[in-house]
Length: 311
Image (tube, rainbow, N blue to C red):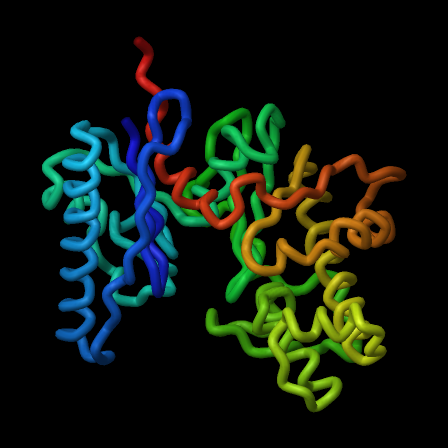
């Protein structure tokens, strides 16, 4: 039995997979929120998160009457230099020995990975990228991250930042796009500031004065609103430029999309046409596809961090 946990900013999900990859249990709970920004309040939130995950695993094992391995996807990564969490949106995790604290709470080793890596591993294992040698798994929602799986193995890299394409600058930036929006990472014109849900919202507001959510912009475009359509077309061209830079370096067999923007059907029609303008090739054979497992891919990938034991 393998348990996967997907730790999100507002919700946490646990899932149990048997050795055939079948889901035996799934549960979602609210992630403990910080009561403030002081160090003591962040410490309290952190301790609550550790206890929440411990209790989720223990109660799941009791319900199934089986114990198992535990893999956890987090909105950050473990620094190889310090063994502590870095780059986490859930800031109470930063600087913590999260894997060790969870291992102590559960009484066993746990495996942690970036949530985008878990997503990519899930889709490469038994999802939309199954059987493909190189899978680039993209999550586009409030942020913009990715994971890379080669021959069934997640690539992490010596800095544990493989796939962080969202914090590269927008490729082939145009005069009217320069210098670009500020990013929380401290730089400007990061891909994430253009392609995330908040990015398209900002771009549309700057162009039209309308502050609308991404899905509302899409709805207006589909109904024939020319200003909304122009915003969607700018978004698609920026997506094509950004993915072309990935394809030029990695040349993946398949790019699997997750997150809210993965549900926009027209991008799978438009992007293949646009990629031909930017990819350094006569043809672009890379397949573009939505995730097979939807928003459960991350938690499935966390469970897949532990291989099946040979019987």
